[in-house]
Image (cartoon, rainbow, N blue to C red; front, top):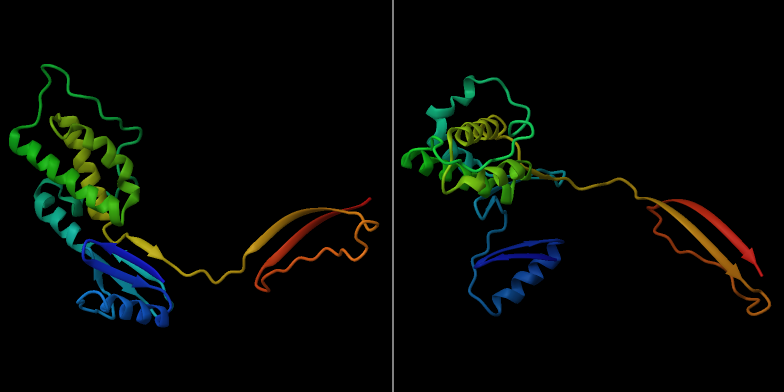
Length: 212
């Protein structure tokens, strides 16, 4: 049984019998509301199909991002982006005398980076590097930083169908094992090497046997 707890929101995963037992144990100590079919947890949309594949998505975060930056980015009419940010982009601090964002633009900049932090934490780890660089200018950004922010926003909105996919694996495990045995039959004539394996394992065994 896997138990995920965030403040007062609890999520149980595992075999059905274990889940029911866990719920019964929790009910003995707390008053709880049980939702059997989980469709959302901590703002994340959770879709499960009959094959057991789970897709975790954050549609409301993209809606919030689009509402704030739709007119600025016009992402639907832009060329499809393949990466989240400009290649080798490294944020450089604003130099003295350099043009900086207006207070309203800086507020929007912080809003955009803040939204990215929610996406990176839950479902879009591929935005982590770009978000890390942009977050260095939360206090004061220039128009190069602003341009890069809009690039990342455009990419995020163009790829908003992406999320975390948990897919059960049904393939057998391939195990490569190198085994060296040193046996002394004079000390223990009944000693026989034995190896117990799961029948679902595919075993490639390299055996070196030395008799003393």
